[in-house]
Structures are given as C-alpha cells and as structure tokens.
Length: 444
Ligand SMILES: Cc1cc2nc3c(=O)[nH]c(=O)nc-3n(C[C@H](O)[C@H](O)[C@H](O)COP(=O)(O)OP(=O)(O)OC[C@H]3O[C@@H](n4cnc5c(N)ncnc54)[C@H](O)[C@@H]3O)c2cc1C
Image (cartoon, rainbow, N blue to C red; front, side, top):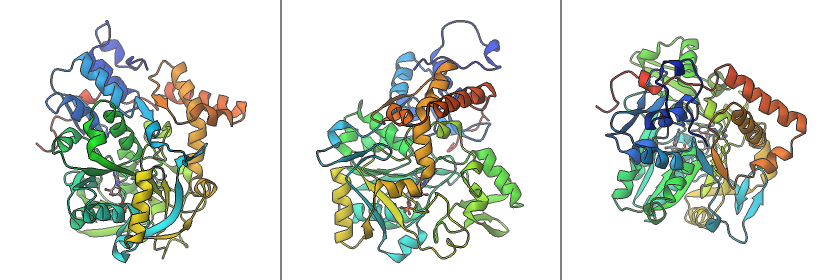
C-alpha cells in the first residue's frame, strides 16, 4: 500500500512535494478503489469528510475541513478500498470447513422466507429480510443497520435503521446504485444498542476493519449479514439504461431494481406513471455485458467472507432466463460461516421464520456463481498488474488469493496481469478528484 497519488492528467497542475493528507485520501478515489461505503466520513467526522454525490455520479468522500495524516492513516486502515480481510481467526472454529473458493463455511443451504409476502418482496427469496425481522422480533438485537431506497437520489440506496418489521420491509430488495450504509456508523455505535448489520461484502469488510480499532463493534454488532455481490451498477450505466428505456433520468422518482418474484421486474417510477424492464435488460444477457465500477472488477471478496452468513441467488450459470424467471418465487443459497450465523439460521427455521429446503455444497455455489469463482481466481494477478503500474494495492488477509491464482494456468495469470495494466493505461481505473464535485451536500 503506497498512498501514492495516481499518474493522471491533473497531476501536472499540482504543487510538487510529498503527498498531502488530501492527496492521500483522494488517491483512493482517483485510483478507482473507493466503494462509496461512507466509513471515511464516520472515521474523520462529517466536519472534515463528507461522502456525497460528485460530478461523475458516484458517492465519494469530499474533504470539507482540516484533514491530517493520522486521520488518513486511520482511513487507510478501515477503508475497504485499501484493506479487505476474511473472517477473523477467532470466528473460525474446529468444525468450520474452508473451501478454496467459498472460504469458511459451517453449513450451506437453499432457503426462503417462510412469510410469503417477505419471500415475494425480497430480492431473491427474502432470506435477509426474514432474518432481520426475526432478529428484532426475537429480541436478539434492538436495531438493524442496512439500506433502503434513497430519499434524495431515486436510483441510489441510503443507510437505514430498522427497529420494527415495517422499517425492515422499507429496505427490502437489492439496491444496485451507490449506497453508503456506514456514513454515520460511529453515531449508531454511540447509541449503545446491540444491532445487526446488513451490507455488501465490502461494507462488512469495512466494519470488521473498524472493529480492530473500535471495541464497540465487537460488543454491539451481534450479526453481520451480507448479499453475495458481483458489484453495483456505475451511475453512467444506469443513466444509459434509463435512456434505452426512453426515460429521462431527471424525471425518475423511484427505481425498484428487483423483487416481487425472482428476480422480478425492474420498475422505473416517474411522475407520469411507471415502466418495467427485465433484470436482463438492466444488467445484460450475460456476464460479458455487466458494467461495473473498477473496484468491483478487482474485488477480492464478493462472497462475504467476513460475514456471519451470506445470501445469494441460485440461477445455474449465474443469470436468470426470461422464461424460467417469469414465475420464480425465489430461492436463496445461504453460506453460513460462523457459530452465530448457524444458531441464527437454525433458530429462524425452528421458529418458522425461514424455510430450509435442503443442504447444498460449495460445488453448487460455484454453479450458481461462476463469475465469483472467476474473479476470485483472477484477483491476485490483477493486483500484480496494479503493482506494476505503481497503484495502491489493497492489503488482504485470509482470502487465499495467491493459492487461487496458482490454480490457474500461468498464461491466464499473465493475461490477467497484463489486461489490468492495459486497462489502467487506458484510464479505465482512474476517476477524477472528487473536488470536482457539485457544491451542494446531500441532506443539507
Ligand atoms: C450490488 C449487488 C450485487 C449483487 N450481486 C450478486 C451476485 O453476484 N450473485 C448473487 O447471488 N447475488 C447478488 N446480489 C444479491 C442478491 O441480489 C440478493 O440481494 C441476495 O440474494 C439476498 O436476497 P434476499 O431476498 O435475501 O434479500 P432481501 O430480503 O431483499 O434483503 C436485501 C437486504 O440487503 C440490503 N441491501 C440491498 N442493497 C444494498 C446495498 N447496495 N448496500 C447495502 N445493503 C443493501 C437491504 O437493505 C436488505 O436488508 C447482489 C446484491 C447487490 C446489492
């Protein structure tokens, strides 16, 4: 990890000298590694760093106060753009299996929410929503920190605190736009209430990173649950999708990405009514068409290795078909990693919150998620390409990346490394400084 500012066209305009704290924070963004989770705002304080929508449409940190090197050091320690670790050793127990691709697991099942409304509304089979409701109603936690559709940017998600079933249902479904669930996690911890966190694997990695510096995380965050995540949609690609649908982005009042069946329709709301598309119209017919932020292309952990459990889709080959998905009620694959996750799953089944259809295997997971397998194997070579180009390379641990790369033919490793170098050279891994942001700050 270098903290070195990127070589881009704006560098020549900057004063020569050692990188300033602002240079170092912005290097994470400029080198395409910011996930937009928001934790840097929580670490630095909103009077110093604000995460909000910037000129390129992403949510990015903008320095608004005096930022010092020690604060940036702390940000590099917790940012999931610069550090991603697998499950802490203390949570890996004797009976935990370690799969080379799927990591630590105690049980893998196919399951869905027992409540038909939750299953229908859920992104896949409503497992995460059912578990969130169960956690609250069984008194295991006082609140759930997760995400809901943004109240200010209709295509985004925003951090959401749930205390009741109705609150949880307001956050049901995957948000494929920028979503920063950790912007004020320090304030949530300050409440002193036991809670569960649901966020993307990178969000979970950030919270685990914070836990190494803030003991309140281990004291209060009783469960970390995650969707398996292939990456989110860049804002420009969402705008292009809306254009293909004949919708002016400025007129969108709501965007439900999926749910109400599996995957269910992608529903765009405007003041004049609504229009629907298929999931495949949004993402493309297969993986080769997926548009992703750079950070997601080099993600070392889309499978939520640091979570208590990870919930996924179960489409063989990784994508639904138009025919078969028309009346699919939704079935999650759930990778349970910890004792707490296992106790939760089994209690939720026993108490009628979840239906477990049957146990499943890592091989089935690979069939449902071939893109996750490919990325997991390619990441170490992609990191070498980043290193070749003098880029920040995230610190990783307990993710088996070198072992997975070694399982690929040497030519494929070299191809991945070179492909990364080429893309960096083409500017595909570079973002502008977030200083180029529009001036208004969300929520003000
Ligand atoms: C960006 C993204 C990429 C994904 N890629 C894959 C993939 O490659 N393979 C796969 O199998 N599944 C993927 N999924 C997961 C899939 O869409 C389902 O979310 C998952 O199967 C859980 O289904 P569910 O019915 O249990 O979720 P639900 O019961 O609908 O619950 C979803 C929960 O996740 C929270 N949430 C939704 N979006 C976000 C977000 N952006 N940030 C933080 N929290 C959020 C919600 O608040 C809610 O609590 C992805 C999800 C997202 C958000």
